[in-house]
Length: 280
Image 1 (cartoon, rainbow, N blue to C red):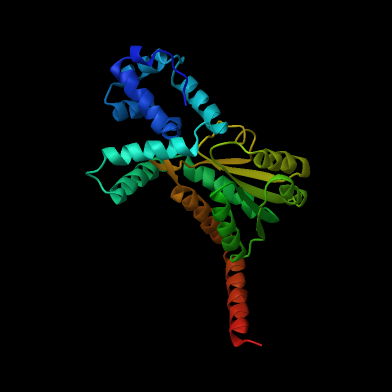
Image 2: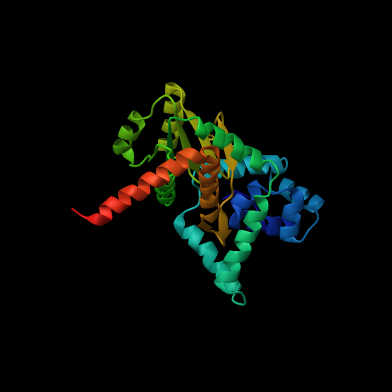
């Protein structure tokens, strides 16, 4: 990920830090010097010196470069699986379940950020005032967007998942209206579809809520609300449980903000299912 000259000339601590950055770039974005020190068994002062020896002015500069690299999608699937296989090979004494549980425990600890409840409250109120709620995520996140749109519909919130790629996505963009709010799942490479959603919402007067692990990225800039939610990694294989947690929290928040609407819709859903069970 990082272009570092003369790796062999680095100190032991700088080498450990570089290895950690290569394996866990997303984690570095939300880590302090003290956090990184614990990861590489060094002092925070040593971490700062190591960062400088890698060619960066300091931790903020390093994070900026990592964020830009993640925006560009610099790591290939082969590289990701390769890192994970190496870590699993080295961790034969700990079963995969333990590795996953430990990884999620660390990620959930980061979700205890004291500013996150306010971020969720702000996002929920924006969504509560929307005429319709859209959701978009690329790759595996498409399924989470679809599932959340279904859950929102079941609590009386008109919703839609924006789907398609290439020219087919133009129809989804064409449907955006004033009064819409779109929840954008922004992880990894910045896709053209995401940038166009942002531009079109600005044009029509809609709202943009971004869920991301890169709050300094292009998609987060000038968004109406940003929820900083890290992904979970084992080795360099990515899991999406924390993103689902964030989406479910928004659904629960909107249920709380509109209990009568949610109950009325639940009754209608029950009645429809009853009629369908009766047959023709």
